[in-house]
Image 1 (cartoon, rainbow over the protein chains, first blue to last red):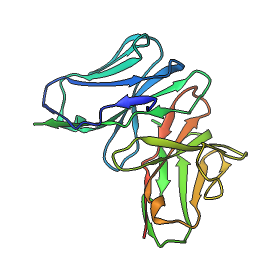
Image 2 (image 1 turned 180 degrees about the vertical axis):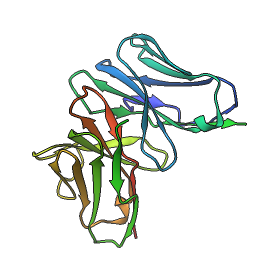
Image 3 (image 1 turned 90 degrees about the horizontal axis):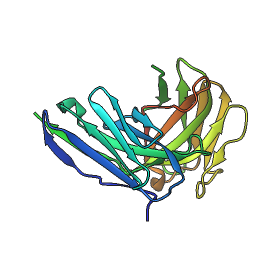
Length: 112
Length: 116
């Protein structure tokens, strides 16, 4: 069993809809959680970084962390075709700076 | 924002040859750089952690003699794939930590290696 599970998709949504992404993990030692966006043939770009359980909002993006359920989510409101990309969740343990464990990534397609 | 570059962006080589990939932090000093590889439709897998001026730390299962890492300065790390074989074909991505920031990695654009 992988430490971090993420549905690879593809997830297709119409422009303007809410994109809902999630990851589950098995190791309760993970304390820091990130979401990255990766366009084809490009490196990942950090979108959201969270530590505690709860919600964090930044513009059209909302990240949720539920440590009790070992479940994290990313919501993208008012989706645009430019949001079409692969979204990777990542997480790390408190004492393992830099050693990120990535999910497989979910491909998102926003259709005009 | 912080920028990390990689060179080359893609390379095709013959089996048995060695390939060097450069990772540079352009506008910040990186005490630590990371090297990942990514297969199509799969996640990034950490290969090694590179600290400036010291030997790299390799993840389990990564051959250190196959993937040579050098981090000679605060802005440059190199990954050399020695005696490359077709199974080494992959997307190699580096990331760098700004020494002034606590917990942020900036990723390079990646290098696509194809070994014939």
